[in-house]
Length: 217
Ligand code: PMT
Image (cartoon, rainbow, N blue to C red; front, top):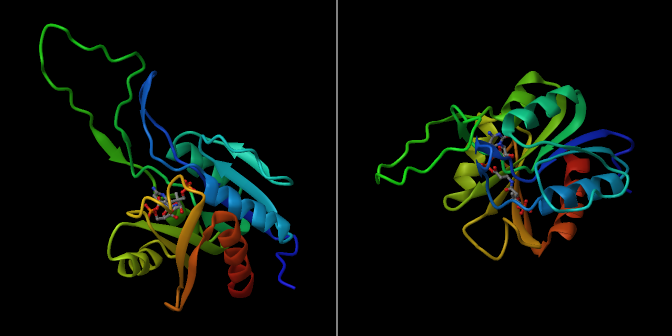
């Protein structure tokens, strides 16, 4: 029987939130369903699971410890504070950019002119790359959310982010991926072996992906 045998599994899920001012922010459509399904499957497979989650409206899976975060910087800090781990799975949709200088007060609209405002964005840290380069995770699993050239882009993320396994999903299909109950995944390992997972509920896919991780890690 496949089992994670008490291994420490850290999983990120959900979106990050990047503040513009106290009442506005930049985020994305991630519901957390994929990451939470993986957390539940990993716990059922015998893992000690820590879920680091952006803001979502999902209950914490039974037996899973959850840490809530907002921004990508917060998520990275929470991940680093909880290393080392045996397996790190990055299912979160981390914002690639944050507002360079968020305002501490509400930015007011000017009524007497039509001028635009400019929002400068700076790069967020790459969480999975930082964790894999730190070598504090023995086996690192990422996702690739792609709209085109899915396989090629996923393979280049394996190399660029130095990860062991990538789960590519086509987020141009509005019936799977972001904020849906179903997904379809192509897993590719660091030797470029491919493992297709046909469309199914995220909960079924998560159990199958955890089985694959048990075999490969
Ligand atoms: O949450 P759901 O509604 O269930 O939707 C699931 C999902 C579509 C969000 C999920 O299946 C998914 O694809 N998650 C990764 C989304 C993403 O950010 O993909 P990416 O190709 O931009 O990033 C590649 C990898 O790097 C991902 O593992 C991501 O978590 C990680 N990353 C990205 C940017 C960043 N600054 N730091 C990161 O660690």
